[in-house]
Amino acid sequence: MGKCSVNNRGDMDHTTSPLNRLPPAVWVLAAPMILIELALQAGGNGIAGGAEGIGWRVAVLERFAFFPELWRWHLEMGSWPVEDVLRLVSYPFVHGDLTSAVFGVVMLLALGKMVGEVFRWWALIVVFLGSGIIAALVYAAMPFVTTAIAGAFPPVYGLVGAFTFLMWVRLAAVGANQFRAFSLIGALLFFQFVLGMLFGGGTLWVAEIAGFVAGFGLSFVVSPGGWARVKARLRER
Image (cartoon, rainbow, N blue to C red; front, side, top):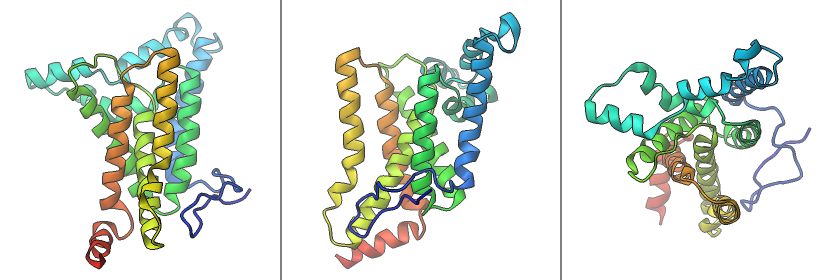
């Protein structure tokens, strides 16, 4: 299989596979999602767990999804049970259905591959988990949202933010238009807008946009060279 990369003009090389030699950190994040979904599919289809297996997904979502109203209640009461605080990092690993799990894992593998080729293993994990945490907190801070969030999309959008950061730096290095770096997030948001118009939109977009901004911002700190390199480039202008 080939290698997916960014050429000197800042464009993606689409002739190569994004899944070639995935960084181990990507599998560390993807493996729990895959295993959990396989178990839920086995239970839901009567292969494992007997009659109880059919209800595994509901039980898992109730235990590990992030509920904004529950978070607000803890904030008001000033109580922080560990099992509910951990929802900030557990919700990306459980999905509401097979389709969202498949898309979430595929996007994680592809974006994790591209970002992981530049970021250190720990930086990739920090961006993913950190974006997921920030996305959930911003989501809960919006008084109009009540729906629980589960699935990889908010932190995956954080990886979109990290990839945008890499493109932004690369384009700056070659003197190209840096706004081109935001073409991917623009396309994703347009696609999401179209789907919302056709099938009705929810409030997950709040967490996804927050995840993107968080991933972009965290990249200034955890990318190779980090903030020092960005400051050096700004001083050159």
